[in-house]
Length: 397
Image (cartoon, rainbow, N blue to C red; front, side):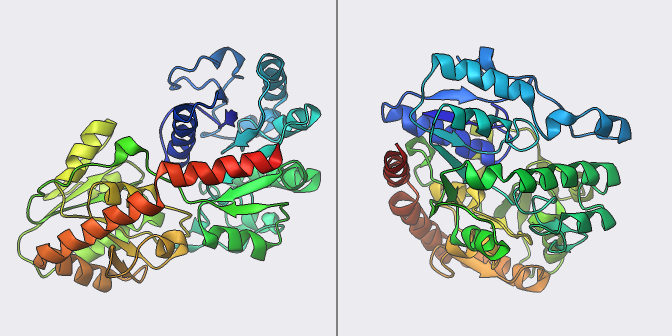
């Protein structure tokens, strides 16, 4: 199997899904090849000699806009992939995030070699120039599928007209070329919510399967004794993840003694760094796990349309309950009052009440965490995922 992603290092949930899929397939005895861009942070891959040059589009200006055709159609990526396919003949190509770095140019090559193509949808990149669908404190709807020009009036991408213009041009080209609709044989969605949003938008796909992410066997841990009053936010420190809502909720907590840790990095880090709040950035995987083991529970107060949260799965694997919001695919993962607590998004008062509930009822906290662990073991394990994935691959071969 050929696994394709924009780069080959761990920085986000999409990267984790890519690496976990590779690891699970290899454990099952499937031969796996990688194809990504040659990012300087990439970890080792025996296939790196085929990787095309990495282009950094994170700091764009008008000059960059005029010199970045590879953002829309990467000819080098297509040539490199063709060289790989001459040496490695996959039964299926499985795409993750290829936008902006590898581009649909590689789809033309895969179809030339008659290779079935599967793509996992990790975000709204195919539907909206703002891939998290969140802008100016609200869900971003005005530039949804086919209405991309509206994004130019709001600077939806990075608050920059030039960045927004570049992405709009790319998306108009992709929609006109229709490669994502015609050259991909099956899409994988992490939640029913995401699949339904694509259907509502009128995006045409030949086949769409819902396959939630999973935990590897090594990501389930023995229950540990947590420190009383400790809880954490673990994720990107950004507005759409509900960080500002959480900061407001912390002012309303009635419980006298508590400690919060923010585990992650992002644009709101400076707003969080204040007396009593601990921020942990750039932790290794083991350091992150050890810190989370010390918590009574985890908070995920997202205010955007989440697909499927690895943060929730991570909490379950550690026997920790989670407080989440009733938005996006989160409601499909948390059973309110059984594996965690659900509150309304953008509601600091309800969030504070939920925090107080778990701080004041440690036995409830423990029972929620245990049920979450059992849910993950039965529903979100690698064997369940692999059976569905290999069945899909088999249908396409």
